[in-house]
Image (tube, rainbow, N blue to C red; front, side):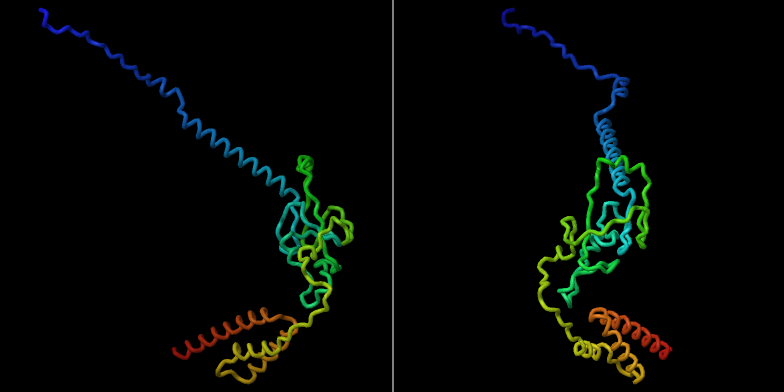
Length: 244
Protein backbone atom coordinates (compact mmCIF):
# COMPACT_ATOMS: atom_id res chain seq x y z
CA UNK A 1 0.00 0.00 0.00
CA UNK A 2 1.30 3.41 -0.92
CA UNK A 3 -0.40 5.24 1.99
CA UNK A 4 1.05 2.94 4.69
CA UNK A 5 3.56 4.60 7.13
CA UNK A 6 7.20 3.79 6.79
CA UNK A 7 8.38 1.69 9.76
CA UNK A 8 10.97 3.45 12.01
CA UNK A 9 13.81 1.27 13.33
CA UNK A 10 13.99 1.02 17.11
CA UNK A 11 17.02 2.81 18.70
CA UNK A 12 18.85 0.97 21.40
CA UNK A 13 19.92 3.23 24.36
CA UNK A 14 23.30 2.24 25.83
CA UNK A 15 23.56 3.32 29.48
CA UNK A 16 26.96 3.58 31.22
CA UNK A 17 27.57 0.76 33.62
CA UNK A 18 28.10 1.92 37.26
CA UNK A 19 31.47 1.17 38.82
CA UNK A 20 31.72 -1.92 40.87
CA UNK A 21 31.66 -1.82 44.62
CA UNK A 22 35.24 -3.04 44.87
CA UNK A 23 36.61 -0.14 42.80
CA UNK A 24 34.60 2.42 44.83
CA UNK A 25 35.95 1.22 48.15
CA UNK A 26 39.56 0.92 47.01
CA UNK A 27 39.74 4.43 45.51
CA UNK A 28 40.06 7.20 48.27
CA UNK A 29 37.92 10.29 47.92
CA UNK A 30 39.30 13.75 47.27
CA UNK A 31 37.97 15.16 50.56
CA UNK A 32 39.84 12.61 52.64
CA UNK A 33 43.08 13.53 50.87
CA UNK A 34 42.52 17.20 51.55
CA UNK A 35 41.74 16.62 55.23
CA UNK A 36 44.86 14.50 55.70
CA UNK A 37 47.06 17.08 53.99
CA UNK A 38 45.53 19.90 56.08
CA UNK A 39 46.11 18.00 59.33
CA UNK A 40 49.69 17.24 58.30
CA UNK A 41 50.31 20.94 57.58
CA UNK A 42 48.84 21.98 60.95
CA UNK A 43 50.99 19.44 62.77
CA UNK A 44 54.07 20.68 60.95
CA UNK A 45 53.28 24.30 61.84
CA UNK A 46 52.78 23.43 65.51
CA UNK A 47 56.09 21.58 65.64
CA UNK A 48 57.88 24.52 64.02
CA UNK A 49 56.27 26.93 66.49
CA UNK A 50 57.36 24.80 69.45
CA UNK A 51 60.87 24.60 68.09
CA UNK A 52 61.02 28.37 67.69
CA UNK A 53 59.81 28.91 71.26
CA UNK A 54 62.41 26.49 72.59
CA UNK A 55 65.10 28.28 70.63
CA UNK A 56 63.89 31.73 71.64
CA UNK A 57 63.45 31.03 75.36
CA UNK A 58 66.62 28.97 75.77
CA UNK A 59 68.69 30.47 78.64
CA UNK A 60 65.75 32.66 79.71
CA UNK A 61 66.54 35.73 81.83
CA UNK A 62 64.45 37.03 84.74
CA UNK A 63 63.79 40.75 85.07
CA UNK A 64 64.65 41.74 88.69
CA UNK A 65 61.83 44.31 88.79
CA UNK A 66 58.75 42.53 87.41
CA UNK A 67 60.05 38.95 88.03
CA UNK A 68 59.07 37.78 84.53
CA UNK A 69 61.23 35.63 82.27
CA UNK A 70 62.30 36.85 78.84
CA UNK A 71 64.58 35.59 76.04
CA UNK A 72 68.31 35.95 76.76
CA UNK A 73 68.61 38.86 74.33
CA UNK A 74 67.15 41.40 76.75
CA UNK A 75 68.10 44.94 77.72
CA UNK A 76 71.04 45.30 80.12
CA UNK A 77 71.93 48.30 82.26
CA UNK A 78 74.94 50.15 80.91
CA UNK A 79 76.42 50.74 84.37
CA UNK A 80 76.00 47.51 86.37
CA UNK A 81 74.94 45.06 83.67
CA UNK A 82 71.67 44.11 85.35
CA UNK A 83 68.92 42.84 83.00
CA UNK A 84 65.73 44.86 82.68
CA UNK A 85 62.74 44.42 80.39
CA UNK A 86 61.45 47.17 78.14
CA UNK A 87 58.21 47.64 80.08
CA UNK A 88 60.14 48.40 83.27
CA UNK A 89 62.71 50.56 81.50
CA UNK A 90 60.17 52.98 80.05
CA UNK A 91 58.83 53.64 83.56
CA UNK A 92 62.15 55.20 84.63
CA UNK A 93 62.36 58.97 84.19
CA UNK A 94 63.75 62.10 85.80
CA UNK A 95 62.25 63.25 89.09
CA UNK A 96 59.18 65.37 88.45
CA UNK A 97 60.05 67.85 91.19
CA UNK A 98 63.68 68.22 90.00
CA UNK A 99 63.80 67.67 86.23
CA UNK A 100 67.37 68.99 86.04
CA UNK A 101 68.61 65.90 87.91
CA UNK A 102 69.23 62.98 85.52
CA UNK A 103 67.57 59.65 86.12
CA UNK A 104 69.50 57.14 88.21
CA UNK A 105 69.92 53.39 87.95
CA UNK A 106 67.40 51.45 90.07
CA UNK A 107 70.09 48.90 90.94
CA UNK A 108 73.33 50.84 91.59
CA UNK A 109 71.88 54.42 91.73
CA UNK A 110 74.32 55.72 89.12
CA UNK A 111 73.20 58.78 87.19
CA UNK A 112 72.36 58.95 83.46
CA UNK A 113 70.68 55.58 83.43
CA UNK A 114 70.67 53.79 80.10
CA UNK A 115 70.52 50.34 78.58
CA UNK A 116 72.29 48.39 75.88
CA UNK A 117 70.79 45.76 73.60
CA UNK A 118 72.50 43.09 71.54
CA UNK A 119 70.38 41.53 68.77
CA UNK A 120 70.34 37.73 68.56
CA UNK A 121 72.70 35.96 66.21
CA UNK A 122 70.40 33.42 64.62
CA UNK A 123 73.26 31.86 62.66
CA UNK A 124 74.61 30.31 65.86
CA UNK A 125 71.31 29.15 67.29
CA UNK A 126 72.10 25.49 66.67
CA UNK A 127 75.32 25.86 68.59
CA UNK A 128 73.61 27.66 71.47
CA UNK A 129 70.83 25.06 71.74
CA UNK A 130 73.30 22.39 72.77
CA UNK A 131 74.63 24.52 75.62
CA UNK A 132 72.61 24.44 78.84
CA UNK A 133 72.25 28.03 80.03
CA UNK A 134 71.63 29.59 83.40
CA UNK A 135 68.92 31.98 84.53
CA UNK A 136 69.47 35.32 86.18
CA UNK A 137 67.94 35.57 89.61
CA UNK A 138 66.63 38.65 91.38
CA UNK A 139 69.99 39.08 93.08
CA UNK A 140 71.69 39.37 89.70
CA UNK A 141 74.00 36.38 90.29
CA UNK A 142 74.75 34.36 87.17
CA UNK A 143 77.55 32.31 85.68
CA UNK A 144 77.92 34.60 82.67
CA UNK A 145 80.83 37.07 82.71
CA UNK A 146 80.10 40.47 84.19
CA UNK A 147 79.41 43.18 81.64
CA UNK A 148 81.66 46.21 81.56
CA UNK A 149 80.34 49.68 82.26
CA UNK A 150 79.51 51.58 79.08
CA UNK A 151 79.63 55.37 78.92
CA UNK A 152 76.32 57.17 78.66
CA UNK A 153 77.72 59.07 75.66
CA UNK A 154 78.10 55.88 73.62
CA UNK A 155 75.97 55.49 70.52
CA UNK A 156 74.98 51.97 71.59
CA UNK A 157 73.34 53.23 74.79
CA UNK A 158 69.67 54.20 75.00
CA UNK A 159 69.13 56.62 77.87
CA UNK A 160 65.92 57.18 79.74
CA UNK A 161 66.00 60.78 78.49
CA UNK A 162 65.82 59.56 74.88
CA UNK A 163 62.29 58.30 75.54
CA UNK A 164 61.15 61.72 76.75
CA UNK A 165 63.17 64.23 74.68
CA UNK A 166 60.68 67.06 75.24
CA UNK A 167 61.38 67.19 78.98
CA UNK A 168 62.75 70.61 79.92
CA UNK A 169 66.01 69.83 81.71
CA UNK A 170 67.38 73.38 81.72
CA UNK A 171 64.66 74.83 83.91
CA UNK A 172 65.13 75.41 87.60
CA UNK A 173 64.01 72.73 90.02
CA UNK A 174 60.31 72.86 90.58
CA UNK A 175 59.02 73.42 94.05
CA UNK A 176 56.79 70.76 95.46
CA UNK A 177 53.14 71.69 95.26
CA UNK A 178 51.77 72.50 98.72
CA UNK A 179 49.25 69.84 99.57
CA UNK A 180 48.63 70.63 103.21
CA UNK A 181 45.50 72.71 102.63
CA UNK A 182 43.97 70.31 100.12
CA UNK A 183 44.78 67.30 102.27
CA UNK A 184 43.34 68.93 105.35
CA UNK A 185 40.12 69.80 103.52
CA UNK A 186 39.86 66.33 102.09
CA UNK A 187 40.53 64.83 105.50
CA UNK A 188 37.67 66.85 106.96
CA UNK A 189 35.29 65.55 104.31
CA UNK A 190 36.38 61.91 104.39
CA UNK A 191 37.30 61.46 108.02
CA UNK A 192 34.62 63.48 109.78
CA UNK A 193 32.25 60.88 111.19
CA UNK A 194 29.64 61.23 113.91
CA UNK A 195 30.09 59.74 117.40
CA UNK A 196 33.91 59.63 117.19
CA UNK A 197 35.95 60.09 120.33
CA UNK A 198 38.63 62.77 120.72
CA UNK A 199 41.39 60.18 121.11
CA UNK A 200 40.57 58.45 117.82
CA UNK A 201 40.44 61.81 116.03
CA UNK A 202 43.82 62.78 117.42
CA UNK A 203 45.31 59.45 116.40
CA UNK A 204 43.97 59.90 112.89
CA UNK A 205 45.48 63.39 112.69
CA UNK A 206 48.88 62.12 113.84
CA UNK A 207 48.73 59.26 111.35
CA UNK A 208 47.88 61.66 108.54
CA UNK A 209 50.64 64.13 109.42
CA UNK A 210 53.24 61.40 109.38
CA UNK A 211 52.12 60.04 106.05
CA UNK A 212 52.14 63.46 104.39
CA UNK A 213 55.93 63.52 104.30
CA UNK A 214 56.41 60.23 102.44
CA UNK A 215 53.22 59.61 100.50
CA UNK A 216 51.60 61.61 97.75
CA UNK A 217 47.96 62.55 97.57
CA UNK A 218 46.77 59.53 95.61
CA UNK A 219 48.33 56.98 97.94
CA UNK A 220 46.99 58.87 100.91
CA UNK A 221 43.46 58.84 99.48
CA UNK A 222 43.65 55.10 98.83
CA UNK A 223 44.83 54.39 102.36
CA UNK A 224 42.10 56.53 103.86
CA UNK A 225 39.45 54.92 101.67
CA UNK A 226 40.53 51.48 102.85
CA UNK A 227 40.59 52.58 106.47
CA UNK A 228 37.15 54.16 106.20
CA UNK A 229 35.71 51.03 104.62
CA UNK A 230 37.09 48.97 107.49
CA UNK A 231 35.61 51.42 109.98
CA UNK A 232 32.23 51.15 108.27
CA UNK A 233 32.36 47.38 108.51
CA UNK A 234 33.08 47.64 112.23
CA UNK A 235 30.15 50.02 112.69
CA UNK A 236 27.83 47.69 110.79
CA UNK A 237 28.83 44.79 112.99
CA UNK A 238 28.15 46.84 116.10
CA UNK A 239 24.72 47.87 114.81
CA UNK A 240 23.84 44.26 114.04
CA UNK A 241 24.80 43.20 117.53
CA UNK A 242 22.67 45.97 119.04
CA UNK A 243 19.68 44.89 116.96
CA UNK A 244 20.05 41.32 118.10
